[in-house]
Image 1 (cartoon, rainbow, N blue to C red):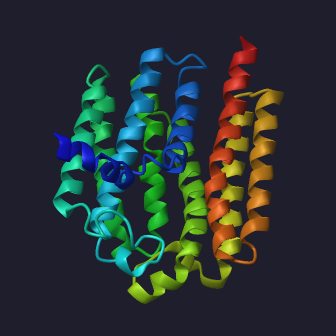
Image 2: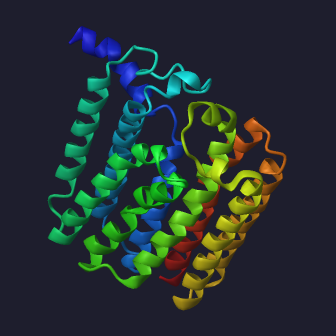
Image 3: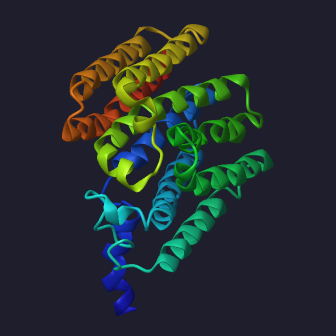
Length: 289
């Protein structure tokens, strides 16, 4: 037990508990779906299940990602000291931890309906297979968008016991958003990724990377504008939407010169974009009463 406790900080680093950005990028679209699916009244039980489940699955995904990338990360300056790559944690430990976290996440949804459980199996497959798509898929960030957004159809399934077209439209919006922020992230490691031969959207888009990021933001926000109109959202929602537009414009200022740290700052700032959009949705329902 003392040895296990001594390794706890390493496991926490492995699953990125010291970095909240990834969890927030999964959480905001899931909360959007919970609020819209429940007409602004998600049950406390569902909130607890989905928030904890999101944190667990994000952590499991990080462990599997580092396992899959263990032979690549040593050649990237930013990732060379990750626990597996540096030899501080064995590869099998990461797999075991990911399996344990996934099992706990599945146990959380046992009180929910069968459709939600069935969707969770597909969500687990997508999350576990994403890291390997970087070997062959030109734009793996699109696949990531499905993995990061699958809480959306699961939330609708848990509340309505079916998945309406709106949920899939919201998932498409999340794919575009993921393409935007993860391309910003990939722009940080572009030079290293070229050397080691993995595929990223930043390399695929090439000199059009900034334009591609902004088009993806535009698609995301256009879809959410359509959702707002279709659902008759009020002025407070549109304040949140305008705030999200402002965040996207700010990101353009950060990434347009392709400086590594500025691109990384833009990626991290997406927690604000997602947050203000969710705030607009939540406040709309709160003010409506």
